[in-house]
Image (cartoon, rainbow, N blue to C red; front, side):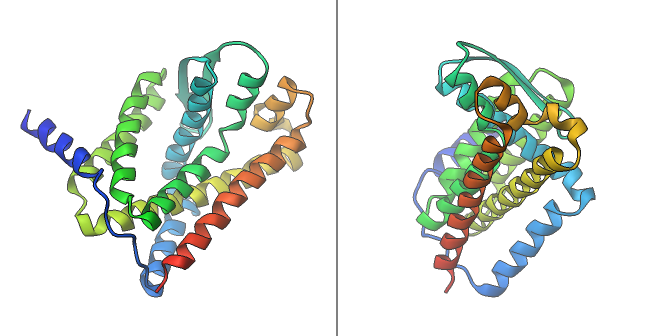
Length: 243
């Protein structure tokens, strides 16, 4: 019980406002290099990419819930593929939930960067920890449960053990890694439509095209606009935080 109480107090303490993060060029470049090292090489991407896939599928699930759909469960596989099973009225809700997969890591990344800009990094970490813990109820396969448990455990450990002065840097780093991961996945899905047509049936853009009268390229363009916008706004905020 003492461990649970300590965790809960750390979560609650995170909702207090802190000073906005002020960046220096060299530490920022070091953080960017670390983010690229963890997200670009294939070896590290095999691990961190599972977390990006998790956020991708949670984006589908959240969009489904807010449009009144019932989420039966989601699966995450070790090859970075995922699947959300939901039910509800066909049409707008199915299309809306189908769209918010690829953009979700970028939107969450932007939210994390913004939290450091506005002085709410601790709150972002606490909310993220609770959200990852709650997401466990949706998982329906062992690989997905393992990914979710590792993600949730890492989030809880960060909430409890991250020093107050380091929280903003940790949150900024997580945001940047999600942004890089989102861009990487964007290039991957574009590649499926341009070079690896044999895999196109598994693409969210293709599935959205089958659910609507709009072609796959329209949905790819939508991914590009949202992800690109998130990257540009995040970059603008980072520049403003430089001293």
